[in-house]
Image 1: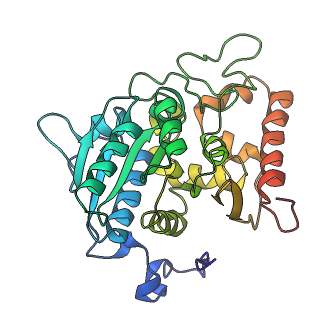
Image 2: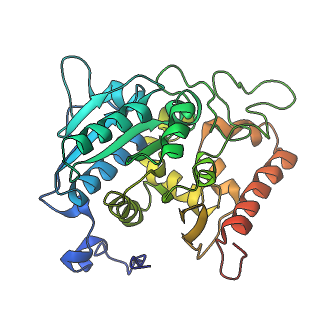
Image 3: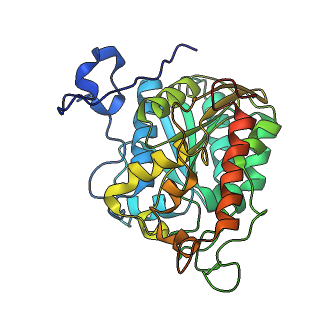
Length: 333
């Protein structure tokens, strides 16, 4: 794989980050010529992971497409906070679709570009977990089945945040939401429900599937820039913490995202034609407690007393991810 993950080590100073790298190895966000696709003036909450994820992903996509990019956006948080009529924060050709038909609209745009003889124009579709895993899953599956020339990006904040933090198909087990309250003998979301859209995408045997996190900027940009010039259906699932819905501190968004990866609750991997082709190996795993304790939506697992049984069940989910995706050296893939 041409991408090599870059590690920075603290040395008692603040001399870390892109300044230590050759210009060619620096992130898109460090470049003064970046597109700023999602510009200032939007109305996202403080610490919004989705705003970060969208800016990172679309800026990288614009660079990979050399500016020839069209974005189709589902209804949801990203659309609402970025385009309050008659304003917009988008600096890219951008279309608003319904909640559930984003993949179909993007497929139509891609077909139109092909009919016009403009194959250099790349098309991306964007949606949250509600518009992707639930309401839009049928259209998304159709896009995958037809192998339409679209890169679909899901920004997963694990609930319907825009409408009041209701449970979605990607809400994790035991999480408190407005529709899975922290009441009763087993508070929060039940175990054994929901779905993994990356695995569903892999089952369609499409050319490229990847997961990414706002805490791993170089990895996220690498995967987007790899996917944009490819043809056929592609899917990237980006983990984007939501301070409002998760009950985390706005300044901890990147820390929370990093703990999700390093606890193995959100594995980072790539897949091509249904087979895992690469993954981010965990140098040091953290127990799931380190991730759960950062969020009030899991507070009932620790107060008034620690819920050993259900925390162990969440740890077992992380352990299974390690085995399934080969996240540790020597682990089976």
